[in-house]
Length: 266
Image (cartoon, rainbow, N blue to C red; front, top):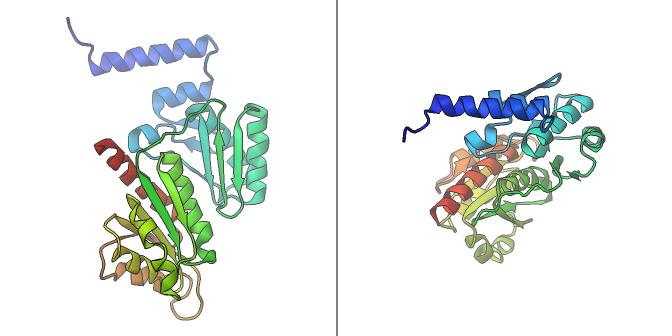
């Protein structure tokens, strides 16, 4: 029996999508996302295929966008993927997302975290992925919580089991040593620290899991605003990976991808 070619399979999927659109089973945005991989809105094009292609859910960066634009993109994300992940959201952005989603999908669950500045929306019945891998997200101090929290949200949305370990900075090593056994249980570790950024280097010398450092833009004077923390992480004498200053999304995505790889190997 002749196997269907890739071109024929694409044609079959396109026809099925058009038939579903004609029958009113899906909307225009979802139809476009199935055929083109993205959905077009007045606020921009949403990459609905990113998770299938890259393993990372597409996020809507609210920073630089008007609240209404953020709400429209979040609604498109919900329609095409079953969820929306919004980062760097102000309370106005979050309110716009809640209003737009409430009109389009009143049964959807909307979770706004003011500390992490994230908004996560799940459609009714959406089942987030679950991976057999744990990501520890560690902070040096309270000021690091917003960036670390963004990383935790992203890793959790990819499917990792996230363990938050707070306020274990090197100003008092006893705080860290009390938690080392717990950190060592993780499959991947994200460490957020500002000022001189020493914590990721110290943690990386104590665990056998991959460590991802997030320099945080705290501190002042010479080397402030994350400059010293970034330089320290890049010059670390222990093996670790470093993302840009305040790049919680990138660190969380990397941790999630590592968790996926570990889950796939179990």
